[in-house]
Structure formats: structure tokens, C-alpha cells
Image (tube, rainbow, N blue to C red):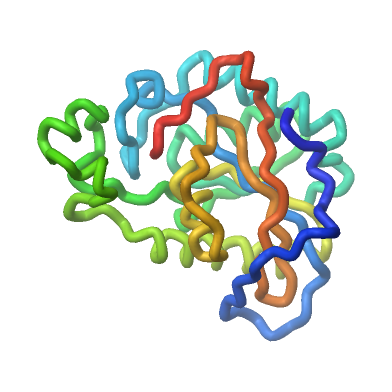
Length: 230
């Protein structure tokens, strides 16, 4: 595990102010993590909003992550919600972790879905290079690829709305690597961080403001992880 998950006190982070209920909220800490390894992760395929299942490795990663969370990173007594993307690689990851933590129910929210990858969904990097020469090297995206700003806006609206229901409790959100990077772009942070499976980032939500915190890795680098972009 890369960090203890303690909330940073010294560094100034950018904030994003979202529209939402005017009722003041108590600050809530929300841990957003990427799902476990899927079959398409293992094959190196762009997933986007396609719905491949977890591999056995992905299920094991979820169990390992639950052990780290239970050991103190996210105390169950402070856990107010577990919420997930409705795509099965995230939903099953969330279900495994919640079962291990003894927490129920797990809620789903489509706003946490991965960015749509347009014509790249289902393709490997080699296939993308062959069919879209120069796109990867230049940072271009194909038709139908959801803009980072749109993905970040829908995900952040979910987190801010969640905070209004938490009343100061913490939450675990299981989503996707592209969504984590989109949130970072929305908050003015570089999007060049590749989130491995079962890694993520803390966020604080307070009065419709979202502030990023520490990056965490729940599965150690010695164990099987993937860094496929989406």
C-alpha cells in the first residue's frame, strides 16, 4: 500500500465548486478506486462502456483490497456508503469488498461509468495503432470518445450529491481509471497518472466543493495489477 490514507494538511489542493443543494454539509471523505482486473484488462483491450467481467485475479485483488481497508484505511464504523459504477467489473469489485467489510447495501450510479471509448472499444493498442495511425502518439481520440470534461462533470456531481447524504461519514466509490483521471482534470491536476487496478484517490466533498487528496494503492506492486488506460 502506497499511503496510509491520512488526509493531507500541508499541501494546497485545487477545488472544484459544483452546483447542488444549498444546505451546508459536514466534510466527507470519499475514496474513489478503480475496479479489479477484468478479462479485457488482461487482454490489453480498451473497455470504455463495454461490460467484460472480472478475472479470477480481479476477484482476488478485491479481497486483498478489502483486507487493507479493514485494517484501518477506511474504518467500517465511519463507512456511510459503498457506491459503484453499474458496469460489472466495478459492481462485482464493490460487492466483494462490501461483503468482506460486512457492509450493505451497495448502491449503483450510472454517472460513475467509464468514459465511452468510441471506436476504440474492444481494440488493443496494436489494433488502435493499425487502424488509427498516429492517434496514440499525438493524443488524438476517435469519434464517440467521451470528453474528459463531460466524464469528470458527471462523476463529480455524483460525489457531491453523495456528500449531502453522508453527514460527515466516509464513503467508498468503485469506478474506473478514466473516471479518476477525468476527475483530476476537472480539478486542475495532470491526467498522466495511470491508475492500476485497485488503486485510487481520496477526495473531500464539502458544501458542493470537491477537493482532491492522497493517491492510494490497495494492491501492492508485487501482486498482479494492470495499467490499461480504460
